[in-house]
Amino acid sequence: MSSNPFEQPGRFFKGNLHTHSNTSDGQLSADEVCSRYRERGYDFLCLSDHFLPVYDFPVTDTRPFRTDSFTTILGAEMHVPATALGEKWHLLANGLPIDFAPPHEAESAPEIAARCAAAGAFVSIVHPAWYSLGVDDARSIEAAHAIEVYNHTSAIKTDRGDGTVLLDQMLALGHRLNALACDDAHFELDDAFGAWVMVRATERSPESLLAALKSGHYYSSTGVELHGIHFDGDEVVVDCSPATGIYLQGKGSREVHAIGHGLTQARLPAYKLGKQGFMRLTVVDARGRRAWSNPFWREG
Ligand SMILES: [Zn+2]
Ligand SMILES: [Zn+2]
Image 1 (spheres, helix red, strand yellow):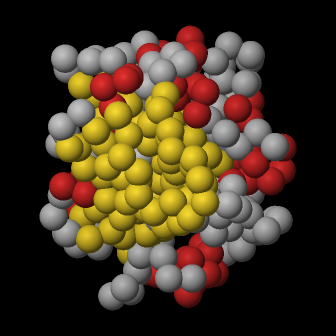
Image 2 (cartoon, rainbow, N blue to C red):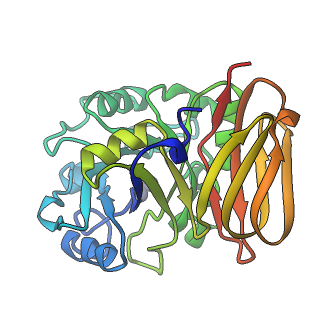
């Protein structure tokens, strides 16, 4: 279980990996967006402006806004034609060089995702429900590291913020993808500070955070805290902030749960999910806030 963040050295750093400034279609300057997240106590932020010709293919330079207690990851949101429904793709690339080259003519989504990953980026398929992205589309992005299970802006604006169905379908097919929860804030609505990642790393540097992200050493949250996940024989033991539901989810309909009031620990019988494949945890609290672990894989 080497992907368990609770078995890694270091501490958790809080960050948002998907945000926009007025370098593309956000309402605030890069400086102002960074200030707001920094003042809110975040450890890091990625401004992921839209990598489109109309904005001159920006990788927004947030390096001037780093401080001793706040860092930034350079990145962008990639858009090339076309999904099965004929829309431009949305792919998040966290950890790009500042001079990442614009898409070459006819560059496809799998190709630009691979180029981002080769340049060092952590690549995610974002807000799939927002534009009805299907499994065949997702399967084509072989370079992807993660799927957004929650996009706060899509939830607020379109009630299509949930990406867990696509993640579970991909996991059932054997794709080793992680989960990701993000704001995708544009500061057009009250769309910031709603979803983040907690990354386990030994230092708050972009390099260390990116390495941890690519290794799956993090969890995602909209307000629930995970305090521990460990495997005790055939059981998974979860410690968390007070919850009303703690769920261990596997292939298809496989699932075990603990439901109650103010639950801060659950011991879940992992063997009921079978001997092979993935399992992942979701914890829900009385306000409907969540935390999502990344999947754990059993070789069996
Ligand atoms: Zn998008
Ligand atoms: Zn976006």
